[in-house]
Image 1: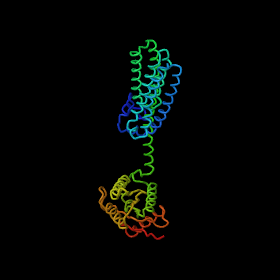
Image 2: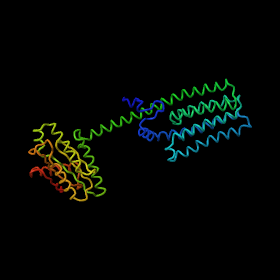
Image 3: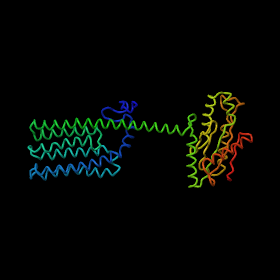
Image 4: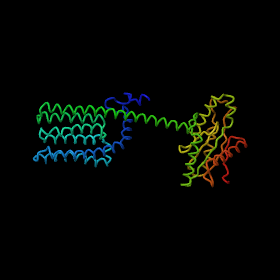
Length: 386
């Protein structure tokens, strides 16, 4: 595993668990948002159900005179997740998902503090465990990031102590025992939340790396290793796409089979290294002579193929053939004039009845050989009759 996948601090901040690269952080949020959305909605619904279940405790532990106030606090707290559940179906939720989910946790925590403040001290022990549940809910269930969860639970812990230590003056030993369990829950849930998020981000980096490697190997398998041009397999696929498009939109397509004249003599005289460099320069010239929508492929040692897409008329392919020949006739440095490079080009226009990829390439190949027989350095258009 690479240093990136291992969580190198130069890539992933140790405490905040943010990627140092802002673009990578945005990509992570975008890619994980669908999971956050489903997770958040589910947690909101489950949290509301649990909140209502806690209301069953009121039957035994809330005095009748405090019952309405307790339920008012409970229902007020429930308004927040109901609102945010509705917001989750709008675009506004995606822009500030972590803040919306944090608001749900804060409403749950402050709601429980408000409810417990109306319960007699003797019955408080039946309600404060809800703060422990809120702690685990925030760190490990709703999908809030560790940094947000830490801030939320720290704020709730301080608020709990202010409410029951200063305002309601709980006895020290009771408040201390509550704090022991709430702080312990923070340590356990917080550590778990930190490790889970860190591992998720490391896994995301690893998946991106593997995807880049898969893309690299796919590209290598579909491209010529010397020139970087599409190989025969990718060319065949693009010809099939062009054929399908031509049948839908009735547009003319052109295939140009290019064989270099005199390349073997250059290779024998100047060496294979020079020959390879020459092929690379030929590939560059051909690529610079066609449109971005066209494809230049290397299909053999000194054989190239150009797929010309969506031609307005047959004249376009004639102009393209002349342009390709002119680009290859330009002198090449390090190549003596007697060894000057030329090319023979066979052209096949399609679609035509009964056409398939192999047949079209063969027709262009045969047209190229007619140029060879006629003296080379030119082009010929294949007959379309069967």
